[in-house]
Length: 219
Length: 219
DNA sequence: CTAAATTTTTAGGCTAATCTAAAATTATAT
DNA sequence: ATATAATTTTAGATTAGCCTAAAAATTTAG
Image (cartoon, rainbow over all chains, first blue to last red; front, side, top):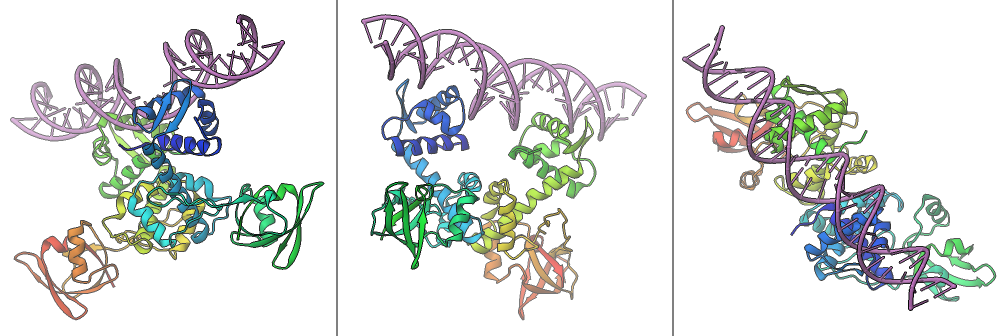
């Protein structure tokens, strides 16, 4: 059974919400993410339940069925592969990719996505450091943590960002920080939570506003 | 004012029909191309006229306004650029590109198409030999003719095909004919309209069924 | 030049996805 | 534990795009 663009967006929203809050996903949470009214969401939930893409109990929230999860993950796979393509091949910056990838993820062509995957050398992460599910829906979990929670004395690699506004990206460019950049947490100032970071033998102090927007991974 | 996917498909259909038959485009002609009923077409024509994309006189057919023409040509530009991308970068064959390009042409992102254009080296023709409109909507007309109408003794370059079934493409592959292949019309058999063609010093007889499906251009 | 055939439009309905307003259910707070 | 608040669902409308059937306009044929 094929899915409409709108159904796909609902499945994706449900998937993302359930990633954070575990358990059942509420109507309101979906409404907020989709930017629609709760009543519209209820209508769609009935439809998705009829198609066996979700398990829906009135007033109790929803969970994805295995088919629903696979459908959602496939959309996410396409979204992230397109993001890599846009950044690596078409000179898009991190903050420009989202809206376009949001459109491209709904293109239906298995060959297209298989070829894009090969063309990009089978990437495993998107430009934000998020893992790209494989074609079977398996997701390799990265052990990424937010830089503000990193340990002093430890060395990390930058794997992504949370904020992708152009202001923040400019800051990163200025200090030559990108995906793969190695950095060592030299000191933590308990008063304001700022961190002293060593990048390529240069020292840099980052405020909490910065460190809560960078994802890193232990080397 | 923005256009929906459906509106874009109507504009494209009207454009293509008017390219062949000049003058006003009839409701039935559009219905046939879109594969919809005439009554549905009438509804849409009213809508497009309200948006000043076409000039519509009841019972008299339609013509594109300048805005309408530019919108149609922009979609065609995107369609053809995507076709080049699919064939040149993603190993699609001539007959596999159409359905996917039909989806990709509706992606809305000026940067995306500008970057794809640059990435491909600003191509001027798609894999079928059709011209790619520039970003201002100008179309460089190729002087392509159908091979069956070529002159004996003249040398031509292959610029495209009409039939893009995989059977026909296999035939072309077998005889090493592609876009840019030079060929000389050595003789024409008036009885069955078959042509004797010289390709890379090899001689080949093509039946009318073949020659009516290959586009060529005088060198 | 009129009658028949064809084309096009109108009228009225359908489905998908949305909305508002009101009703039903569940959660919370004293 | 029950009233109030919050959440969720239902009911009824709306819009885009499509349909069928019937009416209107145009074209074609004799």
